[in-house]
Image (cartoon, rainbow, N blue to C red):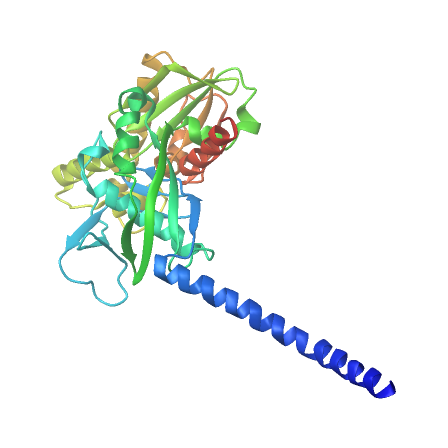
Length: 354
């Protein structure tokens, strides 16, 4: 009897010692089978990501990235170290040469490619995206207030594509994507929503977004957009640059670049003649005065309305705007990605309200 008891004790002891190894082997076996199935299917799992994109005439913006709205095509793989995108057998690289102004960006396929660059940059930052994942992208985008009603459906269709899974390679890494949903929102209003706690109760606030080729404005009344008071003016900092470049060339036989004018605007005047600096600063002040007067002619008085300046152009021109006699109370949203962040915020509100 004692021998049998001892034998059972030994068996029990062996089982206690070996059980963890059997369990590990079991889990490894299960994981291996799942891995084999995943490899046969070609993908590990489906992941959903929301990536907001602001299609500016001067710059493309996401919540985390800013780059020039310019792209070039080439047949061969770019040189080592150069940022590139490979899509449908064509290599694309970013360029500092901007795409010419397009009121309707669906008319130029390069804006779809720039959108893929924006998506790829955000994916590269996301450590949760694995090599074999299918990424379903939710794409909040925007349109100027004046063009929103006319173009939002066209934009949503264009940037969604066919909705099927496609491959693209970004800097040597392949991603499997599908644009699951695209939803367009109103520019300026989106940026203002990022500061809604500060301006939501103001009786009358006007957002002025000074971009590259256009200046958009939109009235907000106690946190709600008033679409009767919105428009897009066909002038921005790039049109101002071009005017100044022509004037300086005509008056002083000197070729300035945009970077020169930006430098003078920012106060880096020691590299240029006094007359050139004076003329540039006067032209910039004239541009600001004409801009605010133009908005006044359309029924919005920036003396009585709380003015919210938005966009890189407004930030660049800040010291000239603050000199204007046409301003009452105002604020600057200095984050150049404010519209993209606003699209993201509005999309989350839309999702929560479904």
